[in-house]
Length: 186
Image (tube, rainbow, N blue to C red):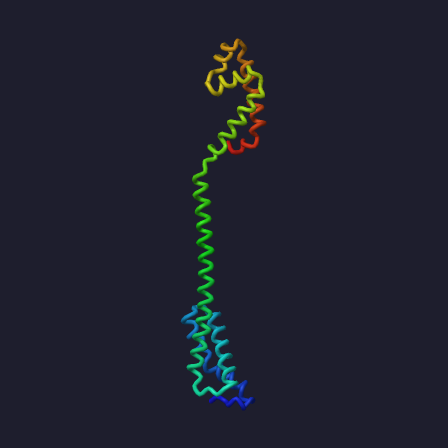
């Protein structure tokens, strides 16, 4: 059935014969294991070429066992490569999942109010220190001690509009000092 390696004129026909006789079986054998039609086609074709090359160099009495060995090895190579790629992807995925979980946990644990509250308090106290003493005192009475404008006006002996003026003056300066933090509040 197969030509001797000395018969060069039979080799193209011989490959066509090998391909015609063994391609479908080779393809189906590979497909069972690799479960990828394109990969099975490549493995079957490469295996038949390899068989043909061996048969050009030496006499092969029974090509089926040799073809099966070639198919097996090429399928194993493909599966090992797939396994290594999947393992790498799993490691990357596991690493990405761990990193994502850390970010989720960190964000869940984050309390922006506590992060900025001390900074904001420091800025408020520094801004208040720059104000005249009476303005500072009126603001503290209003915002810290929760006194009404009428009560503060009576305590300080000034008009309610005067109290409003001092509070507005501090609030204006605080808006300027805290401009970077206002977006957090909203």
